[in-house]
Image 1 (cartoon, rainbow, N blue to C red):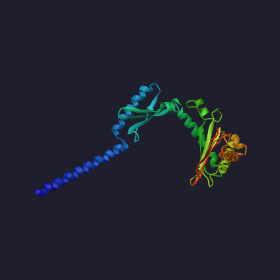
Image 2: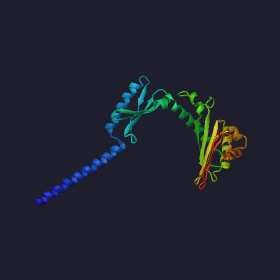
Image 3: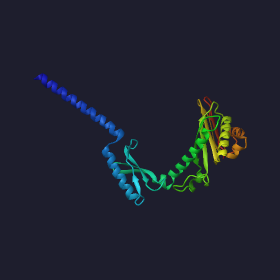
Length: 260
């Protein structure tokens, strides 16, 4: 009889330990991935918020996903008829945490990103075909002076009055001002041939802790053929060119020059 009691106690303790372990695992999974009932509740909350806040705009709420950062849920809300009308709404415990409509739609953030991404892809295709002195990745950014001219949903066109800037990032055996100047001259020649224009060019080259960064470089400065000299003067403190230049070596202090 005593032996049976001991066995029962052992089985009971073992079962309790398994339950505690299962509860712990379930808690971790819920913390990491959320729960079906939590997602369902958030879906209803976001749907009700969108219908009340943006009635008449023909918006659709996609399936919600868990956001570990807020431990809440978020959903993409989009128009079924208008391009660039989409934004993110986040909710938690019955409350709306955030709504990106103002930045993405009212301030034309979605349109700006689409225009930049479209131009970036065109530039990258051109650079893939070019024989450059250093491999680089390109990114195109709308010039701040043109942001106000963007219209929601406007199509990308090389013919409109919007101005863009081109930034290049890559590696070079010698990340020096001379190497940066040479690369910008090569890229400018390719862009000019393709009919692509930019208000300013910039480049960042790195290798083994050394780097050179140049920004606010105008097409006229590149086309003039004296860009390496302009960079050297900027490095020495000359601000007349307006060029921003920073160099860093593995064992050297940072040298910096900013143009007015």
